[in-house]
Length: 77
Image 1 (cartoon, rainbow, N blue to C red):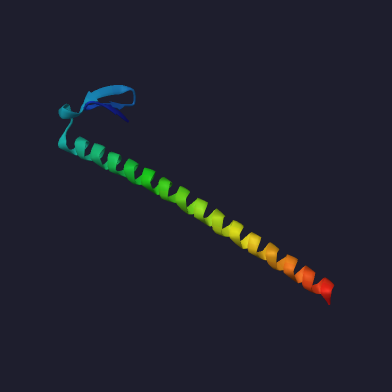
Image 2 (spheres, helix red, strand yellow):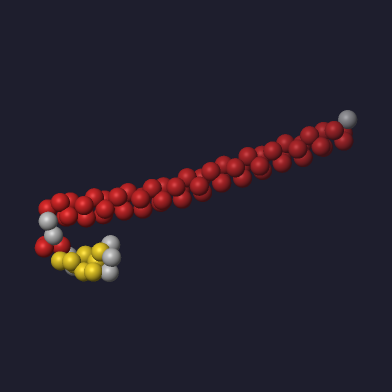
């Protein structure tokens, strides 16, 4: 479904939105709302993925630093 100035394209055929029934317009509004929600969820997922990667990298670096300290302590003993 694509839309241009109240003209809706469904399966390659164009329909004037004003000519569609109340139910059909309701379906169109539901689809638009769901597309917006889907986009927002993808946006949020991208943010969560980046944050998760940052925390994972921080943990890895933290463990590496501890290993270096442990290695230096072992060599001094």
